[in-house]
Image (tube, rainbow, N blue to C red; front, side):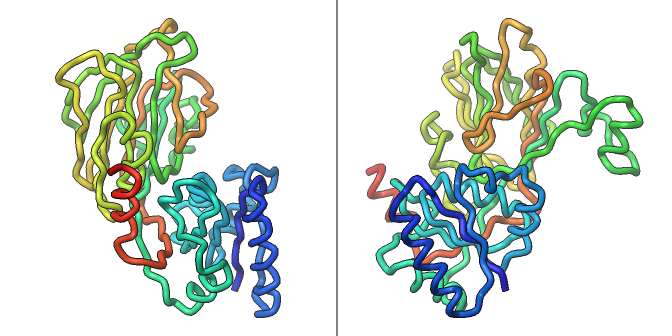
Length: 303
């Protein structure tokens, strides 16, 4: 058995808790690895670290929601259970640390904690000069083989637990976003951008943009315009099987768009032209110490 510990190394309490947890695991003869959030050894682009994370029996997160999001990216779609212990601020995704890290990890190893299977997002970003897989089809081969055959690089795919956000660029000009859901054109929105969120992300950027709060185990997505220049543009809750398409092709050089995944800016090879968002193949598994805690937290924070 191997356990991954991801800690917020800028938080003294999280650092102390990681040392205590490491001693406990050593005494139990359980192999473990410690990663510092923000450190060079904690990147979701590190293939070796991601492979090790996805083969772990448990990921323990010592920090707040930002550390939880980072860990969810390391785990990806491997469905490795994530036990969050809050040493941050809001802590929507993590458990309170009142019981102590050793007690909570002991309960997790004994199978005494409840599992929440959260929907995540699979995001495909098609940039200028790339072929669109949803329009052209990948054929019988892999996406990379298709792109190579066409003489162009494959569009990039990304994992998100909270949301995909498209916002206006550095020049500050409004952008135009064409919204299509399940192949049906819905609206052309001029404004500051668009957010497509999971139920987990409905309490993050999507909420700030005026979107609804979804039940945490909902499989639906929510598409929310950001400051639209229209009285009729509203948030839309999709069916779990729907694909949300954002068309950015009508934005010229003077109206550039930036793309964020769970708050992190994407480094794209050229201007984004189309973005597809759909439900991920496998859920993100969070371990929770109390039932209905999400609704209590919502009522405490927002009401």
